[in-house]
Image 1 (cartoon, rainbow, N blue to C red):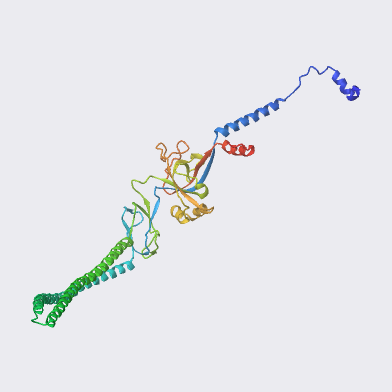
Image 2 (cartoon, rainbow, N blue to C red):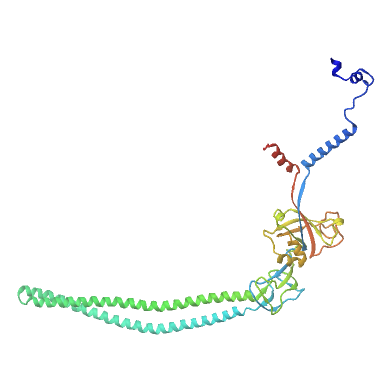
Length: 421
């Protein structure tokens, strides 16, 4: 029954001992090499994943320029240029007047105000003179009336005293039957009338005192009103004088070298419009800094203190490398094309920078190195044998983030395994 289960040839082969002494080949040498290579690749990947880094960078384009750059002197007021006091190549100090602007409207307002103040002062003097004369007469009249009333009160008071004594005597005579009651009543009526007269005179005296005070008060109020108008117009005049001083003179807020006269005599300029362009100078001005423009998306991740690589366009990057620097400032908001054009003075370059959308302005200091010809530290040992001048175009690269590759894998593993810790 067993012979039917297996083929006859197979049974004969198993019973033949010819190949029983041969080794069984489990894995070919090529397989071992492939396995070893795979293991090395995995090990290398793990080591790189743990100890290696991935860098995230943003590139930019801009210019190398003296710190502070080219500063456009503008004005806060509109008007026509009537005088330019500098020429290209001149050096100006902080506070120097570089031009004057016509402010005839403000000047006319000043003339009108001065005339108005003059008229108010004359009105005040006239009011004082008139009121003084009028008040003197009024007060003299009041004093005369008061004197008459006081004399009347004094006289009536004496008469009242006499009548009261008379009434007292008459009451005695009435009691004795020597006179009638009507005689005493008549005297009493005289006393009442006299008392009323005295009271009325006293009230009139009070009214005269009030009138006297009001007369003086009216004069003071008129003078006070005019004084208020004089003060208000004088304050307005001082404000206009300061405005005229500020608006007619175009003053340089910095020391620098005039590199361009933008406006011309007779030209009307708007508020904020450039009139003279300066290249800033002074003890606080460093030699050169980089001003570059980067896309706003990645640019928001660039922070002061980050490393930056600067590649001047006049230097072969593949031969001399790049200048090392540090980011010092990043604009909070996107910069306008006009602002970029002020710096680069190249419409095509500005268009290429802003073509992809809004950009941020990044400023960076170049790291100094006295051992190199240029005076700056390069990624190569010596850098190029030339001096880097202000106004040189450049490209930049900022590393804004680095992380271990394994950090990218861990979130994926967590998602696959569902294990979070």
